[in-house]
Image 1 (cartoon, rainbow, N blue to C red):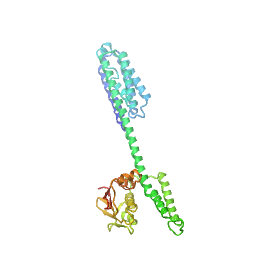
Image 2 (image 1 turned 30 degrees about the horizontal axis):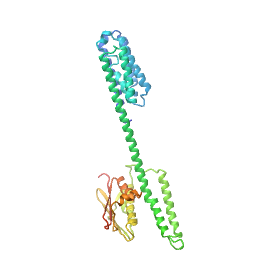
Image 3 (image 1 turned 180 degrees about the vertical axis):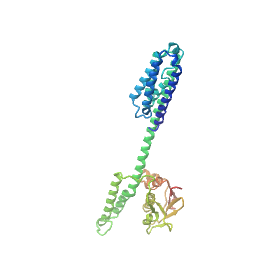
Image 4 (image 1 turned 90 degrees about the vertical axis):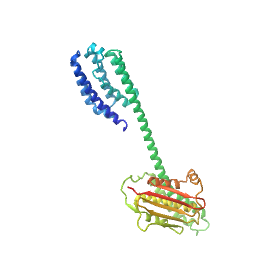
Length: 382
């Protein structure tokens, strides 16, 4: 209703001003008409009706077709009554009808309510009443009819276009929201369920069913089952619709160093400032998850002997985390091929997360020279 409400309010104001104009016009001419009392009675009724329906015409939900139909009847009555109130000489000389330009408000109301077709119908009915009860087919009457038709049809057409545009915009926003939610789900599934399933597959490939002492064999599947159970419960909670934190809500700050420390091992070195790197909880969690996705890519794709270094830089306006490895690097077109194959570690778990945080994720690589992922998150208020 955002597009229509200003127009409806404008019509409501127009009706009041048009009423004042009609009263002033008749006041200046009532001594020259045949039945001034009838004219004043009609204008009194018109005043009551206008004031009684001002709120209705200011809101499309209140302005029903019954109200508009009654409004049209009031206009037609005034036009036909004008032929009785006024003198034939004044009518031939081009005297205005009792409602004068107030009739245009009825046509505009029909245009806003139903588009150009109801507006054209209302304008035609008023025009026929003008011809039948106030002077016949004259240049002035034809001129007034054309003006009513043009105004009503133009406003009605614009309203129809505005409604169509608003519907398209609403649909686009819904699609965007659904797409972002799908991306969020894809990131969480990639970081949890898919990685656990990949681990199960790798452990299963190395298992020796004939050797009970093999930790990856039957005796070691209990731990994998536990991890799979945890991921199943997490996925069920995710699919049940647990709400995301609302944008702008206050959250406790976390030290990013503590979230990244678990990634350090014999192959991965974490370097961070000596003081706490504080970020809002959700931001720190998402940034750490993106780093985790980058580390997981190193472990899966850089080779068993590759090393990696995580460097945290705490700047006044942003926090930058670099993940660099000495693996074989990234071949040209590898990312696009991975996305087509449904592997979304970089596009969603890394880049998608940083875009949601208002930051950026850049990849630098050359064949044989390793890969560097630079994640940058701006601090709010800078």
